[in-house]
Amino acid sequence: MAFLIKNKTFIHSTRYFKFDVPTKCNKSFLSTVIPEHYDQTINSNIKTFKHQHTTLISLNRPDEKNRLNIKTVSDLRKAISEFENDCSSKVAIIYGEGGSFCGGMESELVKAPEIWNNFLQSYCQKPIIAAVSGFSYDVGFDLCLWCDIRIVEENAVIAVNRKSDAPKSKTFLKRLISTVGYSRAMDLVLTGRDLYSKEAFECGLANRIVACGSSVGQAVNMAFNIGKFPQLAMSYDRSIIHKTSIK
Image 1 (cartoon, rainbow, N blue to C red):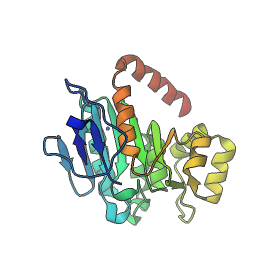
Image 2 (cartoon, one colour):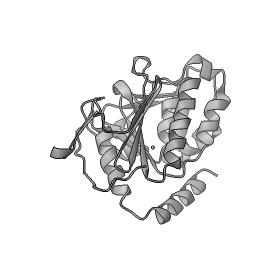
Image 3 (cartoon, rainbow, N blue to C red):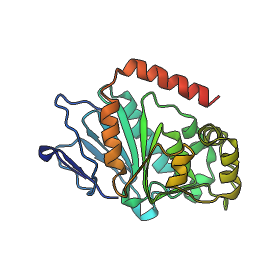
């Protein structure tokens, strides 16, 4: 990923921080090369770095379509916790490397459902945006719905895994009903059919539909604007919305 600050361009391919000199980023996001002067952390599962008052967190398992295992969930929780505890960071963005958001979970996580359910029940004190590209399948659906806002690329596909014997968590189902309504939630859960970006937007699951390859850049622009508002009042309003929707 590269930020060409001088030309005010933000480039990319397929959680809140503030700097003294604000710099806007444009909507393109076409490369995964990051200049060395950006504060970044990379391990085998999760990659994080900061831009202005925004923390970007990526699922870094592109060869596995960013499927989650126990280690990845642990690393993701750690990255979110570090973002939440950094007072200079205001907004986070979660996305997937290699063109897909998250293609599901591996068998070891299927055998330990409490690990993922505990994550879904967690609440981050600051806003998180999901930049959804490619497949957002099973727990990928869970994760993007766990986030506050979803920016969805026009070729994205979201679905529940009905081939698995494991039931969905109550937390996910409550969020789904709250977001898309009883009837459509029943449809998606019972059929396991693919939900494409246009329908996702129409039913309220997607907040924005954007061009392929631009979801992270669009999320950065949104995070930049969110970061300009008074944070205390916004955090209070956000907490009330969360408590009301997840009873």
